[in-house]
Image (cartoon, rainbow, N blue to C red; front, side, top):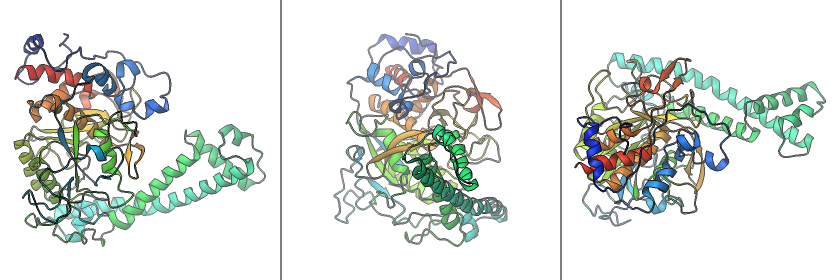
Length: 539
């Protein structure tokens, strides 16, 4: 077996790894290595686009994680032990057709009796817990800092600077987007009527003989939009998403007079005030889709002829509702991590983050607690397109007490996002990066997964990259439960593929993967399972 591709784990030599290959393991094979730099020639088919994160770099020239190949060549019909993955997020649609069969069920709790049957401190927590009560909309943390006058004068000044930067932009963008949407919608309906067809091409528009200057303007706008590679319905949908985003910003996230915590009834800045929330972590709003999408990436039922295939089989999803439409509270995240660790989760997916964290010490202590319980914490790097190694750039939670300080735990892996185009633009333009603060990259742009209403759609963000890695971690822990969270983290990082290409960042600067992440690699399930097998043989 060729083990030279793998960077050795800390304290282990290549020679030791090679010696372990002589015994029979659960999964064996030759790792995938990629030395080329070829970009994909043909467009992805619709089917490939819906599962590009599962494709193989070598066979498909797409920076996927070789998931399909791993199941076909390595896993086949093998079944591992059940693994619980906690999804700390916005809540999950519990009756989704592709998720309801993979939900964690608390074995010690009886549904709906209003009693804490298992004595874990949480009533009726059948599928997880809801730390948000019936709330949904929230402020961003810096807005709360100003409203409640939290912290010292320096923190107040930073929060005010952030609000002064963000609020005018949102107030200006909202009416502009609404006006553009109205104009494009009017033009679209008008040209459909004039052409006598529901669907039309740029050529149809170019061949159309305009009757007035106003009509010429309308057709020109449609040609401009379609020239950007968008069909008009998709463009209108994108505009509507933008309008909803800025509406939330103005009405809730950046509104200094709004208090989203009232429905919960606790003091979110008092850690001892811990009797709050309820045992129903289902979604509360049709727009609350984030957790449902994340859960599908990890563990949607495989080969059930519904929707999508999750990365991992033999997984049970624990839903922990703790991330509102706005910034999460440190108290909720700390309690959510502890809940997951105490109730059997072996992997926690954390697809959230924020710039300010006034009670970050609560989360740090919770991370240490999860480490003591051997739980792997998988965190999204964030979507600001910035270098997290820069002292001015922060993204909470993290695993260090300030920049350039040593990591406080070794069960924490931070994931950046890849796009489906192999080459210099492989790292998604929105993804944060950092040689010290981002561990690895995984598919995160244009990811197709479950959505509320038992539907499916594409979403993008490092929020989608983290659950891809959480799925890899869950499979490793399923087949090799003797491996620790720390070992699983190192296996994922050391087994990734490291194409020798330069990545173009937002400022046109070119960097290698090793310059913008700790591992210098993109996650790969196929290789991770082979390396996990090798490491497990030595235990």
